[in-house]
Length: 386
Image (cartoon, rainbow, N blue to C red; front, side, top):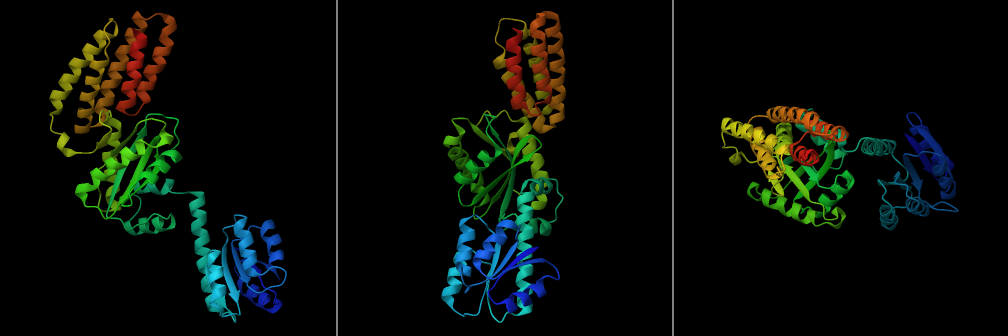
């Protein structure tokens, strides 16, 4: 760690420098003006400053560096046991206020505290919440490890429930930072949403406190309504797919599977979607049989003059229900078979200059990764085929 010591007493500077230079790199200045030159030329991690110095005192120095945007950790040293000095120093975000003569043990303890703050700040700057939340959803942390990381990342660990989720915005050009700001600014005090990238999707880690489980869905719906009206969305619809609430972070791996399945399978017919076991009562076999019938009808309408959109909507609605009951892979297999048959129709019945466009769109259908996007691409493709 790089430490800057400001004190007009050469003996004090030297004594503190000898103590700290065993472990850290130390710069010395005898007033605030010299300190400004040193901090501008070096990457300083900790400032130890006296208050009363010639030319520029310690408080003037702190005011100057804070106005320039330096957030360097600072500790004030003074021989004056005066609350007024301490009060002014606190205004400039100092870590602590030490009275001279300085105790070596107390100084080392504070320097180690500053070291920890710097390490945590560096972790936040370098990594942010992204890798932590992905690892949390993968089940890589124990409860205690998760709590420690949350404290470093300024995530309040004192919540009652967590919810895993995914968010979709109709306008794909809206950034993850914008979505995050919109959700956080429109969330009630009891709900704190964190948006991060999970694969290619905008994932949600939501903490909930001081709300009974009965009212969570109602609060989340109000959040979505308020967020959807935010001017930064420019009228673009915002959807959220959420897992059922979890009591501990150890459940998040399973809750992520719930939310991801919902994200992959929902068609967002309703503006708000949540994972709900009560909607799972339809038999898989009957759904699959109906999907087979609809698949044939869709194919028959492709080369006719009849618009197949309604039939495609019904087809994907059944796929969505089947996928939630069994697995998304089953829906993918059915879509892959439909795409294969559409490819054959395109090569047999469509003029050559349109085939490359249609085949490119059908390839997009294969890689969409969720039924909502797959359906929208497919509707557009079939229009090109008619």
